[in-house]
Amino acid sequence: MTEFIRSRVSYDGLENRPQRYPDLPEPLEIGTYDNHTHLEIADGESPLTVEEHLKLMRQTGMLGAVQVGVTLKSSKWSAQVAANEPMLLAAVALHPNEAPLYGSRADLDAAIAEIADLASQPRVAAIGETGLDFFRTEGEKELELQQHSFEEHIRIAKENDIAMQIHDREAHAEVVETLNRVGAPERTVFHCFSGDVELVEIAKPNGWFISFAGNVTFKKNQYLRDALLACDPTQILIETDAPFLTPEPMRGRPNAPYLVPHTLRFMADVLGWEVNRLAKQINQNTEAAYGSWSKGL
Image (tube, rainbow, N blue to C red):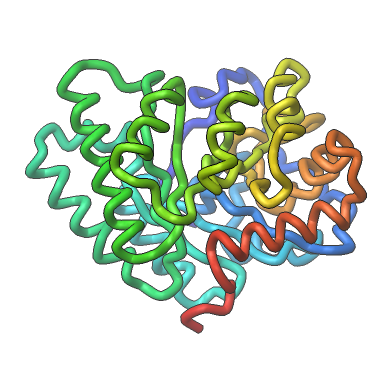
């Protein structure tokens, strides 16, 4: 499939997890979008090709996905694979934990310049994932490079008038401070939302989108369900962050965009909405954030 491979065990701390992809869920009557996925990351005992991912998405009623880069290499791959694939748009960026690995401002800026070049491609619909991560990054110099990278990615999103997807881990206050100080892009998405009702209330007047992943289904995460209930309907997006964060009851197994229906149905139940109503609302929100999936074809 591709050489961009990471370990899921180190990501979500699940040992001895089943390696087989889950069965197909019941197809959606009204399809929707996965606004954050990593198809470049091979996973499971039989990793899926891009073509296999897309086939399964069509079988479950999915309309499309945003393929997200986290390194310069995977960002280039994301832009390339989306260039001629109607179901995929691309997001490009250096992940917050990637930025400090460059070691110097000069080397980091050289890589960010290449991200800026990718951002001008017609089927690159977002800068992401970028942001701040205080869980994995430590040290004054490393955090300075991460902060610089975040601000440069904000600049690139605004210059290209495209959305920005934020990775925010244990850095809510600092992310908000940066967005307020530098000026957030018009379409800002909190990917894999990990905040609470307070952060939702901050996001509302700013028009920032809140994207929920499979971890909203985890029993311990009542704070995420409370956050969902606090959202303005026009804020809500849905994602997999595949191959991570597979929803209950398949938690720990490989994730993929075709599994969005599980999370969508769970979210509709939390909200007390019909599934089709939520799908329609998320579709409007997703297209408001990223534009048409036919752009640039």
